[in-house]
Length: 126
Image 1 (cartoon, rainbow, N blue to C red):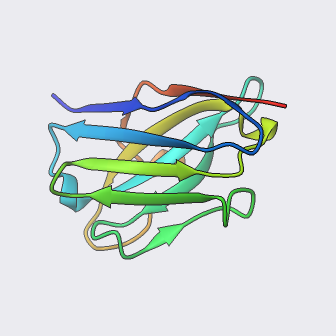
Image 2: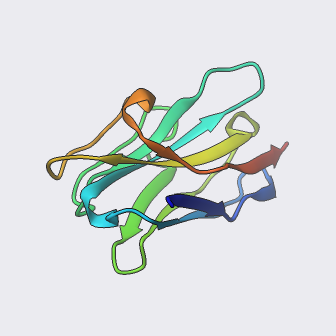
């Protein structure tokens, strides 16, 4: 059974930081690209960070570039999202997702991800 379990969400003041974790089980972790997505009320789910198998390739949208950092520890089957300089527009439910790939590539489209976690709420107060 595949499980992706996010943790680390919570309430933080604007300008603060949070570190999200996503522990994976039931998959060959080092053959899956991983991604972090978020969805705010009334908005579509959007990608905020993606990382390839080996962790050598990462991708971010302009909205979080320079503030968010994705990383992974294949020995622990865990992917992380370090979020700095948070602002109220970052408030959303954050999801991690896994996509089986044939190479050390990035996967950006939500539809390409097979497995999803249950999400963790991040709320940034002004």
